[in-house]
Length: 330
Image (cartoon, rainbow, N blue to C red; front, side):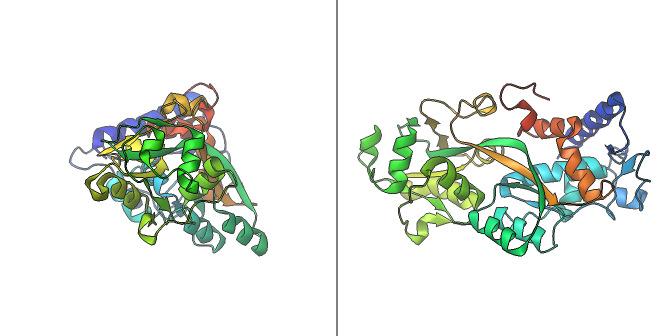
């Protein structure tokens, strides 16, 4: 991230915290270096121990910063959180942001390898593993996203209905001419069963209907692989796939692609925020239940839902939960 953007985020959070009066459990970003030759200070050099917790300010350092994990689409947010709270540039915090994708991140939390997740809803297998292992989480949505469908930019189809999408993925609609497109067989790419977007697909779109079995080469484990495959498939507009709106819109993943409207509603910040787009999916902050209020992981978890945290989420291009349903955008 460029220095100007980093400092603008840091100043935004710090100023809001000062204006709010920052109570006993508030978290403060570490100070940034003002040397223009550096992108930001390395706070691990400047601060080695946390400030006292309680009625005083708490400052995150590398020695106390929680281990973050989560979904592919929340990697930029994880970087932004670490950047602001440690007072370092995104480049410098890259070494501590290693998100392992949705399903693996929940397993990392259960195995004691992560402290806080920023992740989509887990697959059913994770809920079963949680119950079997007797794990208990604090888990709440901090932002909302939309499951979107992408096709090659040259595909003449601009919108599909929910029923048409179900038909494409249950195998009853097999040619684009059936939905207003060219006379081409539809090639429907899917994610693997442990992907967060696959869980969203099954819950939001299929609603209990089984998806047709896809050839192995049409099932992609990485979100980036799926959108690239749809854009480049066979030099034709035959392919379709799905991903999250944030990923397609904000992570330069949609080159050569078109994001389809659903029931005539185009996904964007307004339609996702006000709920008029039909396929809405939440991102959750998750940590072990029962952590004391002074635990750094609990402090970071709570900060995500604070006014400052929600403002950072909005600044990073996500749709904060406080904005959903017509609430005031941070």
